[in-house]
Every structure is written in structure tokens, then in C-alpha cells.
Length: 198
Image 1 (cartoon, rainbow, N blue to C red):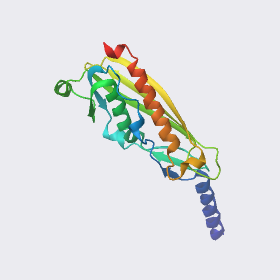
Image 2 (cartoon, one colour; image 1 turned 90 degrees about the vertical axis):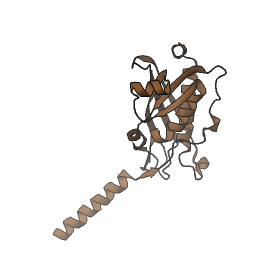
Image 3 (spheres, rainbow, N blue to C red; image 1 turned 180 degrees about the horizontal axis):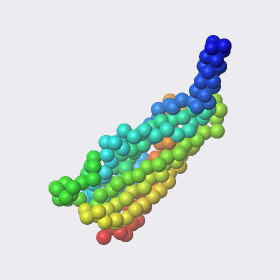
Image 4 (cartoon, helix red, strand yellow; image 1 turned 120 degrees about the vertical axis):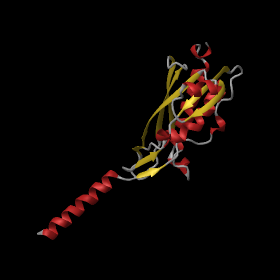
């Protein structure tokens, strides 16, 4: 009886494992060289981009195809694209690991502090392959002045799609297209903001 119970428990565990799938690592940021170039009249301000070490190591898991999932680190992957986007909008950008204190603000001559928030979704209709064919990246940037007063808050959503025939070895292609779309939209939104030019 005990043997039968053990076999039943093992079979149930196997079914649960198969149903839950596994998480495959992908990178959601690709070639950043295609970002829109610097504005003809960049905003004459120095901004601090705040992404903490804790955020860089934060792992996110979302659905892929075939019942599997994908895992990635959105803040680590988007740090460079966001930095490049801000560098296209403003005179200068300084990377910061934490919210700056008054001493850092003075030393770096910061006019604004930019704090990004990133959320993602992914999906695939495939029952046989795991890479997601559809991906979204919602990027929100909160811009404050040195006193902490809100200057501007912009939120955009980028979408990316990839066909199975395109994947080859780049299984994060849909995600990378969504990232590029989101960052380009954020750059345009900031360039058009009158509040940031005050």
C-alpha cells in the first residue's frame, strides 16, 4: 500500500512539473544603436538616472509558449537603453545606484532625477516552442527636481512581435523589439515635454 501511495505521489508530482513548465533565460534588450539620435536642441540640463543594485538583480518570470515561461532582469537589461535615450534628450546623464543626497546633487550639478519603473508581459500561442512571440514593455519615468518635487511623469508601452521563423538563436527577439519601441516612445515623449525645458 505504501509503495502504491509513493508511486501515485511521484506521478502527481511529475504531472504538476510538466504542467508548470520551466523558465528559460532571455535578454530583453538587443542592439541599442538603432535608437533615435540626439535632439537638435538637447535640454540644457544634467539628470541623474536612478537604478539600484536591488533592481538590477530583480528577476521577472512571464509566460512563453508550450506551457513554459521565460525569465529575465528588466532593469539590468534596460539600463543602457534608458541611459542612451536620456543622453539623446538632455545635455548630460549621470548613473546613480540610489536616490542622491544633497551632497551628490551639488557635486554632480543635477537639475533632475529620473526614476524608471518597468513592467512587462509576454505570451505565445505555440504549444510546441517556448520563446514568446508577443511581448510588451511598459516604461514609466518619474522626473523630480533636487527638492523631490514632481516635474514630469511619462508612461509609454512598447510592443514587440516575432515569428517562429525569425528566432534562430535570438529567443528574446519579441522582447527586444518591445524594449526598443518603449524606449523610442519615451524619448519622443520627453523631447516634446515643455515641463522638462523649464
